[in-house]
Length: 136
Image 1 (cartoon, rainbow, N blue to C red):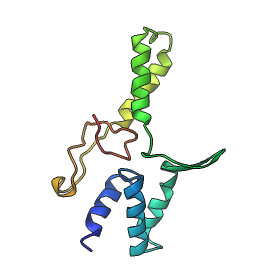
Image 2: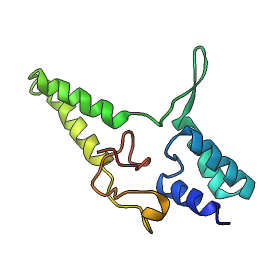
Image 3: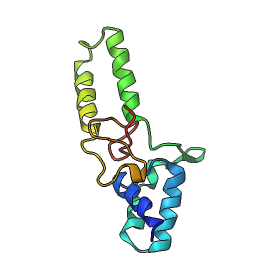
């Protein structure tokens, strides 16, 4: 029961994405062992495509659930560095909306230190808000 506390905490605070694919698999196995037909295991299963997909040459797995936010910010920096922002105004607006939508809106509940978490509110993740671990 004690082992499940940090697993449950991370699952719930990353919306079952987890910090990366290694502990995603471990958490998912623990949840299956706990209850193979339970909601937690089912929620994990729905997030598998965040890490795995089938390409033309077979199954692929990424080491993170993506880099969407960083990719967006680097692209926008490049657009502004070239002075092209006026020519692609709609793109810049969509990127700004995406940045706003991806910002983490709240800290994880409970004792952050106990679960090795940091303040998240106002931060941006590497990939998606669901992931929630602050990068900047």
